[in-house]
Image 1 (cartoon, rainbow, N blue to C red):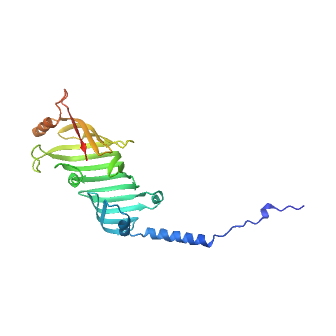
Image 2: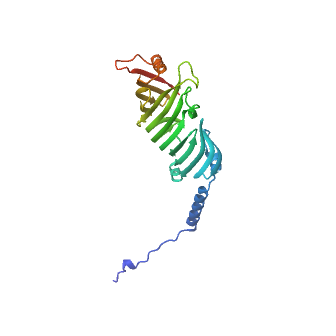
Image 3: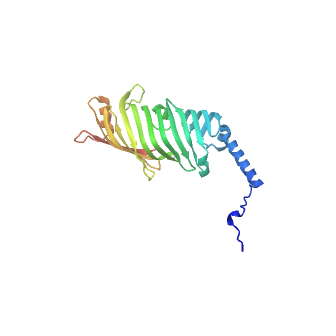
Amino acid sequence: MRQRDPSSTPILVSAPSKFSWIALGAGAYLAFLLTLFPASTAYRWFAPDSLRLAGIEGTLWSGRALLGSVGRFGLNEIQWRLQPWPLLLARIGGQVQARLANGFLETEIEATFTETTLRNLRASISLDGLQELLPLGGIEGYVSAELSELRIQDRWPVGATGEIRLGELEVPLIFTPSSDSLIALGNYRIRFVDSSNGVLVGNFEDQGGPLEVSGSLRLSPDRAYVIEGVVRTRPEAPVELSQGLEFMTAPPDASGQRAFSLSGSL
């Protein structure tokens, strides 16, 4: 009996159905609309109550705003470029940059419903621009940050890797808290190493100035802070600074170092 050559059997390929073409066209049209989705409309529909923007231009994916704030933290000349693909995982991701009070901010951002992560963060701001957020009590100077990662939950940092620098610090003299009675403290650096328990830990040290300082900073998820360390004056320290340390710290040890500890909540 003659056998049929399998290679001669025709292969049937079904053409896409009409429904498939319609679905493909609808998907392409939806993607086109999303790329042009106005930023002002997205802000009205989706922005959380803590975010305020004004002078909005551009699209959801690439836009700018003249003014803005996150909680009590003010921003100017805000620009963003978001990536659409993280939305498939219920995330928002992209790059953001803005001007701050006498400073700047630029970072990569990834946000979910429960956590915001900032990566490759670079920022600088005068302490005067943080008066609404922190009880600085007349302290002047600037703060700059270079963090490879900063994790935030419920508007509170729960993890960080990188360093923060405090520069040109000046504080009011004790019992005379006026801008005309400031005393220089120098420059300082805080290094953070990420931890997995939600407690943010940083080690700090001076970078020159009238004080020799080292210690640690701990921020707990319940918004409590603990600052502990040792300090001693250098020969060039003003008499007023030495007197202030005697009032605020423990008696010196044999090496002249004085222990100090501050705690509270924010």
